[in-house]
Image (tube, rainbow, N blue to C red; front, top):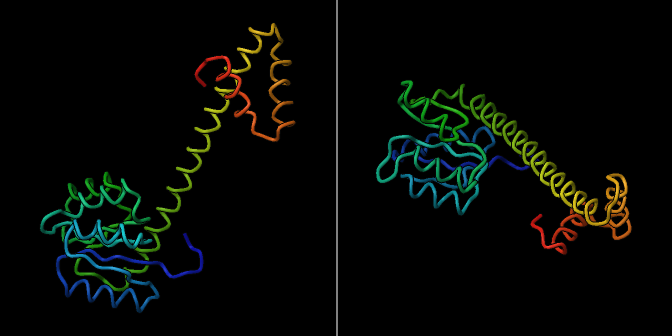
Length: 197
């Protein structure tokens, strides 16, 4: 996420003056505002085009509210971090925001001294969540591979009357000889046997 370039930002709020003020505050702190939107639909279109690191999203807007727009932006992975910009601090809004994938919450009027800490804490939360997702995905893929290898090994043991060790060594030798992952060898064997990997 931090690759030496400026953090890119899209500001979404139906008040042009707030967008202008926030844009100024962000630019002064080294952030790069790459787009603005006045409603949820424009927010989605702008994020599709700009793919920002960070979005400031108002809740109450015409046409499409900020929480609905956030859900779509998160579903399409159009932005890394979303901070809610709102005048509402009641529990319901906070719970809905958490369920939508919001990483931070900034109450209007914006306190300039809270701006940078809010951004950096929200971006760090996003970073931690992404790392966890990557670990889970890696573990899931390893588990799927293991299941395919075990299934192939079982078929080899049954078909060739091999011991578990010999079946495993057979898979490993082909993998090394052909310089391809063992799971691919297992998939080929299962496919040739007419079995689903």
